Length: 259
Image 1 (tube, rainbow, N blue to C red):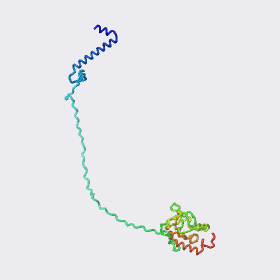
Image 2 (cartoon, one colour; image 1 turned 45 degrees about the horizontal axis):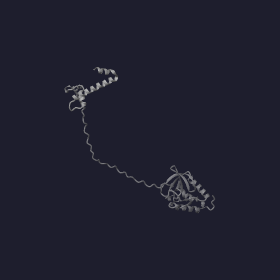
Image 3 (cartoon, helix red, strand yellow; image 1 turned 120 degrees about the horizontal axis):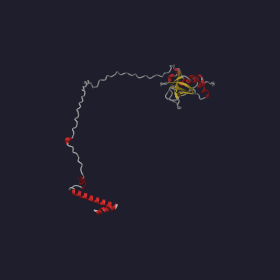
């Protein structure tokens, strides 16, 4: 024992060696005890666990379970529902429809041309029964052409079947006479077959008051007749008016006419 103590006191390293030897010895002893006490069929870890002191787990007996509180029975009182009285029986059969009396619709008669009544000498009887339009003459362009305001729009209107003089002097006279007849006045316009001439001007028979303007200008010798089929409804009337002016030597037909 004395040599061991002398070895212990000699140096710090010796102390560490002694501690290590004691630890190894203790570990070997504990391992030997564990192996000796290890039951058959158990692993080393299980034996080590069994070797350690076990904490007791309290057992809870069935009789120790406290009784749960009894739920109080709740009774709901529902209101008494009284069913509504039965609905009256509805007859779903197809009812008989009472036909309304049929109204007799009369077709609107064709409106005649609303032109003033004249004798046959006025020439209005040749104008076709086409729908007329009314407008106000706002400008005179020449002896057979005017500008007319129709429904807030201005149209250039050429007199159907009428030719204005090509001579400059007679053309001015025809324009002045045309202005006397229609300028600023309301006129009635009626088409023949064509709506416009090749230049896009409205081609119309023009009536102002009781005067057939187309025929009037020809009969007074300011314009001449011009047959342009298919717009020939009044060609014969205009031809007779020109013959009358030529025979009476009026207007351009006068041999001594001086513009």
